[in-house]
Image 1 (tube, rainbow, N blue to C red):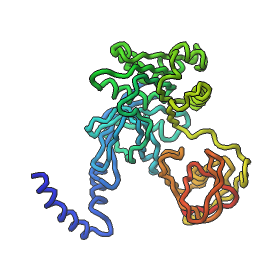
Image 2 (image 1 turned 30 degrees about the horizontal axis):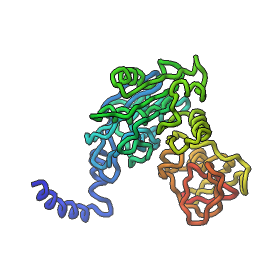
Image 3 (image 1 turned 60 degrees about the horizontal axis):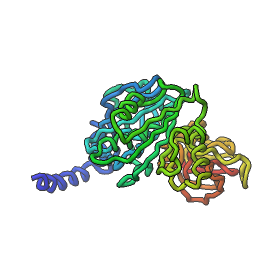
Image 4 (image 1 turned 135 degrees about the vertical axis):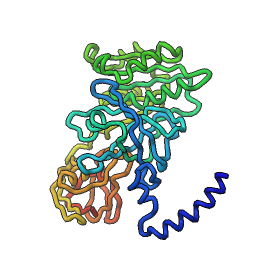
Length: 364
């Protein structure tokens, strides 16, 4: 019966498309309710609760156009309207896939931030958010290895808690899992109560909290004391750049870098300004808007354009989601992650991780 209805509905939908051209019926549905649109996926906030003083979890009911996520640990671009402009950021999904169309993200309010304080403190139930396609390969393989280590810090616990929740839902034998989580103190541990209860209830999980205000930064000696076989475990690390840099050094020195999986919420430190040809910035012209501005060698084209008042496409702002792709009309740019200089007229570049190398024209 469902197949018959779909067969009958298809020509009706196609006929509606001819009547509404150049717009599509989906464009009108999006005006009535954004959750009906398959072209512009959106979701409605169904629940909001505080995890810590500066971290808030939002449960979102996705509309018909959202593709869902396939594995715990992935992230989703989220678009939110603030002062009449749509801003995009990416957040780890903290719930494992369950086919319900609902998922949760947990947002820490970054001081002086634009989007995270809005999501963490001002969003209320019923608010609609735009959703992008789920991405990311910071996930557990199937079947998972027999011994796991999660090394997390601060809000970097979010992809790990999704994987831990997925493991807790499994039946049968679960991997021997160690979670070493670093936070300023016990009150700042996001999901602290849930993680402590899970570690008490589940024999396969061992939780070690490292409180930096009392114990200082995590080092190799302390890690060895908490998890003596750390270099032998398949490991997932996510957190502040200092923690990830420590993890990279420790696993590399132990000849175990191949067992370490990293997830960064921010791009690595930019290449040294001035290194390489054209490393002294330049003037950028946004040809369609007619705006011109000067940009330094460590300033992304995205930030330069926004500061000059240009409406810039953006997403994760760290070179992953590629929502900021824009055509280069003239000049060359430098990749802030690697220092590589590249670009020919007509190339499509990521403005969030590209800086100017002399005069540059962008087709925006």
